Length: 454
Picture 1 (spheres, one colour):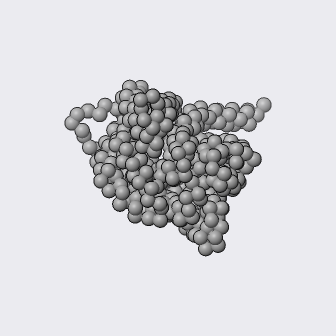
Picture 2 (cartoon, helix red, strand yellow):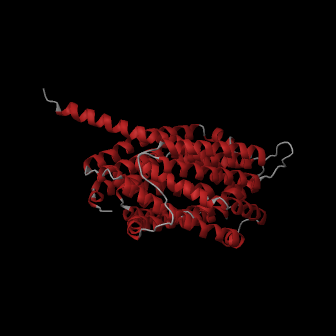
Picture 3 (tube, one colour):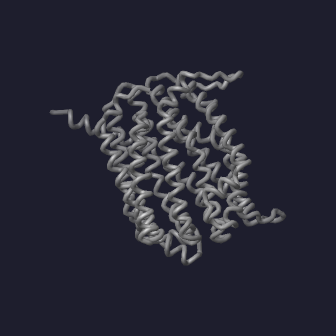
């Protein structure tokens, strides 16, 4: 009897199982993480369109300053996964230590900038926005910035644990962060007993508190992990060679993320110029759509970990099979989410705001993005797979050509020149997603990433 087909089927089933075991905690983690933003949006949305727009602008600004952190995280995850695949937990721990040191240093710089120059930065970037919105946004940013060091450590350590193959711990920590944020929002936004209602300021305090606790929990878990050796000995020792290896992967990722953030900023500026109702509808639709990021996020992380570890173990073909397995599962689940968005768009939007004008406009946007879910799945998972291999330069060029050229160009033409408004901007988003998804898949299939040395 020919056992080869049976053996291949067993290997394939094992691969899907491995992908799913890594992905499901990350999917739940992302769902919990997104819930933090959703809770803020839903609760602040009850305060009015101005408060809703203020939190949205604040998050855009905070995201702009996470570019370098994302670069460090990308390089760290790829390097840690390679070391773990090669069965070298000590070097993996050394990479993680250097990445955390970098993250703390960057957090101190960014926090200082936001506390001192928050108002002029917001005023320059969103000069067409109402003054009341900018004032509320400034309050939110300054409070959240106080917890930036802990938040950056949380993000960085979670990326280390995922590189090791531990996706359950980040899920548990995010659950605690989410719970703290929900309780804090209920008490501080609307008031409770002797505690006055603080509105947007209350949402910011709640978020900062939750992130601080999360940072401490992540550090504690990293120090006690039995899969990676981390000591953080004193005095601090900076290892230039490891930092160079992290940045070799991270610098292209920083440029890519920087281009993406700047592109998103210009995209937001164009949408903000359409008026408060359009911007509020845009934020609500984005938060509603973010639910669908969960499967893509989870399977992208699984692809990153498995591609990196298999390359470290000298198994490039299994690395490729892991990427494709994660992609197929993500397409299946996210296409299902697209059907829900399409047929229940206004019901979903109503969860975030009672404003009829916002509901109608955001509902149309949600129908548009429903059609783009398969492309979003491909784009997320295969970019994750390429990051696991350290192929951040390829992702950089795809992002520049897709988001910066296609999305921004089409948004200006459709939303501004042809006066289709917010609907035109979301159509441009859909076209961009299909464009980038095609290029990501093509690059992964070419296989040049298998030859990269980190």
